[in-house]
Length: 386
Image (cartoon, rainbow, N blue to C red):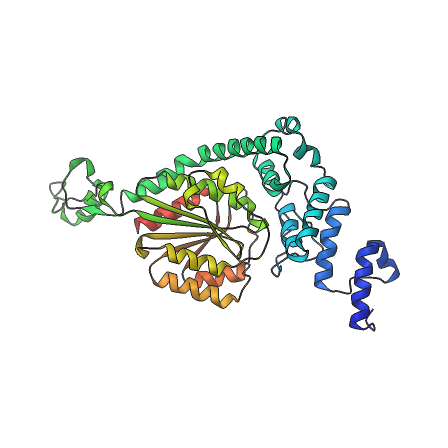
């Protein structure tokens, strides 16, 4: 192989894909060609044994040295497989391969038979499977799938809501004081702390020069939370939690919430932010990634930088020049916008993201987290309190 011409290596690699892995015994390989190795990984997922996870639920298989795609030699998940097929195959071939995936990975019955689907306990892994293959659902199963997704979303929302609301609303009530002396709005903690210098040790009394009061909530300018969700297959877990989080934000007083999905294009779903099921059914897995464009769009939504928080959910694998992303992040940070970049969001969040790029963004003003929804709310509460 080492003495073969580039054309010969190209031909041998194509024959290797046609003949299968056994061809390597005869010296017919993919010739260390990264593209052909990725194609082999995709084909092996369909026709090989023990490859990947048929539900796409495990989240395993992200190589630490991934270069904007799938490397060879590690297990694929269904969302990763979808990303790679969208990148390497034309649309018609992509449709054929996805149908073959459903047939060969043991979920055809699940998608075709509503009665079978009804027997399965609704859970986030099932939701991920349904979202990954939503275009292949028949009409009856589609109705049931929506019901299942809604059930899981409501369960997640109830689990998250109390702590998220407490963290955000508590911070909002305390991020500004008012000159109006209304007893029920007394900020006792701040009043005591700022008058400690007046404590008289002899009498054991604290003399108050000034009392501090919380501002009436309706008098205050709202905070604007902008949630930007990467549609790449590796981010499906985080997209589910992001949609639920955004719906909770939308119900809070003194919070204005914007939500959009992105790949190389932008899908603004702010008018659906209170309907997380509709948001999730709008997710289109696969395609390229333009994080810079997403931040530019978010920047355009900002009206008051000092009271705006951009929550970016992405794996930080940028499709364009990384310098553009760093420049855009710095520009937004310097304008006063607070930015949180999430490599993963969820209860079993796996930190599979481009750490090198994330570190560069942290240096120019973006907080980088991999956390639970409640931890994210606490972080946002700290930002609001200042």
